[in-house]
Length: 140
Image 1 (spheres, rainbow, N blue to C red):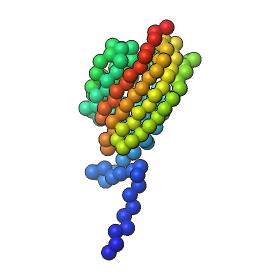
Image 2 (cartoon, rainbow, N blue to C red):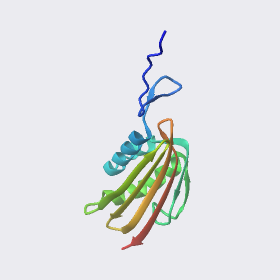
Image 3 (cartoon, rainbow, N blue to C red):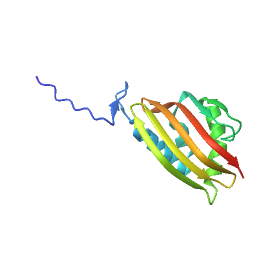
Image 4 (cartoon, helix red, strand yellow):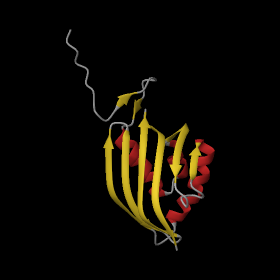
């Protein structure tokens, strides 16, 4: 019998049989949650062992944030900063290749000017397992 299975490039089957999101879909959902100030949605994108490298001034002193508690602490600072009236955020570039996603952005909040920001994501099985954030942050 001929194999008639169809595979889509954006969806895959997880070991449990549930359909998982593609890297592009995870990135889009993550950016939407960030823009909406949705802390719970943002945190749901990460696995418990996620490591996020971040610069000084992005949610506190630059360090590595690991796991849900540390990520919650960081984004509890960052999301309110970006939610204030008058905030400007401009996406300059997005690229996705396999399990990797990359964005370049700039922003201005009431507190800081982000002259250049860049995030790199590693996404496995529909979840972010590692992220690196780089930014030139100038306090106002």
